[in-house]
Length: 293
Image 1 (cartoon, rainbow, N blue to C red):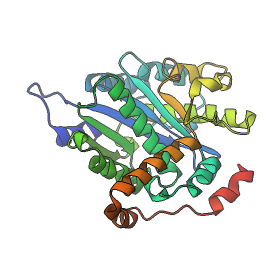
Image 2 (cartoon, rainbow, N blue to C red):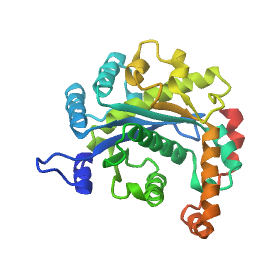
Image 3 (cartoon, rainbow, N blue to C red):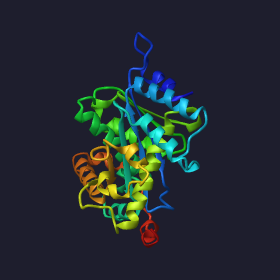
C-alpha cells in the first residue's frame, strides 16, 4: 500500500475522488553513532503537486529505488532536484549536532519530553512544517506525514501521539505513516533532500568547531560557502534555505525544556504517567564521543 492510499484511508476523498490533505514526506541522513551531525529532510506540498512530482520522477528514474549514496551522477541529481524544488513545494530540513545536543539534554529537567537525537531532529522537522502552515494560515488543513519505514518508528510515533494530545485544536487533522521506500516514489525526493543537506552540513562542520550561532537555530544559507561547487545543493534548497532549512541548536532544547517545566508545574499529576510512557534518559557515553566527532 502506498502513501496516497494510506492518506485516503486516513482522510477520505472529495466528491471528485481527489485526496483532500496536504502531504509531507521525510527521510533521515546520517547516523548518530557514526556522524557528528544528522539531518531529517523532505518536502510539503498539495496532493496534485505530489502526484506531478511522482510522475516526473518516474519518467526520469523509472521504477527503481533511489538512494543518493548509490549514485554519482550529478547531472541526474540536479534534474531530480528541479523536479521536487518547484512552485508550490516547501523544501524542509532540520540538522542536529550530536554532541552539543546531548550536552544540552543532560542539563534539562525533563529529557524524556525531548528524547534521543533522531527523535529530536524529526520533531524539529515536524515543527518547522507546522510553522510554515501557521505562517500561511493553513494549520486548520489536514496533513499526512510520511516517513520511511524503519526510521525509528516508535520514537516518531510518540511525537505524533504526544502532538495530538497536547494540541487539541489539531486533533483529527494530522496523521502519519511509515512506508518502505520501494513502495513510495515520493520518499525518493525526500532522500535526495536529506542527503544533499547532510553533505553540506558535514562539510561545514569540518570548517567550524560548531555550527551553533548562539540562537535556537541557524539558517542553512549561513553555510552557503559549503554548498557543492557543481550546484546540486543550491538546486535542492534554493528559495528555502533562509526560512525552511535549519541547523537546530542547543538553546532550542533548553527552551523546549522550559515549556515542559511550566507544563508540569500546572499539571503535576501528568509527570508520573509521562515518564512511564516516555521512559528515556540520555546516556553519558554520548557526550564522551564528542572528541571523536
